[in-house]
Length: 131
Image 1 (spheres, rainbow, N blue to C red):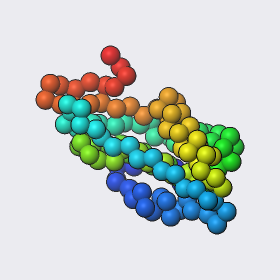
Image 2: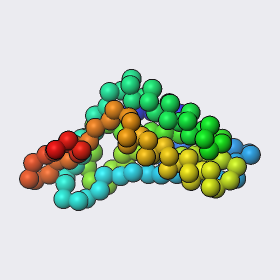
Image 3: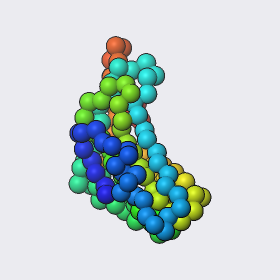
Image 4: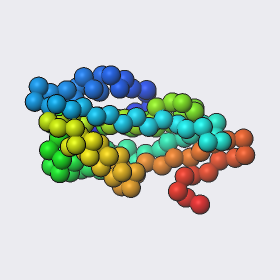
């Protein structure tokens, strides 16, 4: 499953979907809005292009790391500190592949997916990565 949504998600449900009889490892990554002087974060996506890019990244990770299953959810909208932003769950026969696959997906997502973050605080707002 690959999803871009305004709704919160269940990491437990994602893990359940990723479990396989032949997978000995399930690894998850959960990104949240961090309190580094902001009150909230606004996330926007070019939804169709982002979904297509996330599918490419998922397929690359499956091929490179021999993953059994991959679940990816990314939120958009206005999120307060502490809210979930993104979750990735990977299952594989062995832990190294699951960890490496999960790391690959988050790093490539941040580089390639057309998803943008704006930090909002009492001193104003700024797009992250766009100075």
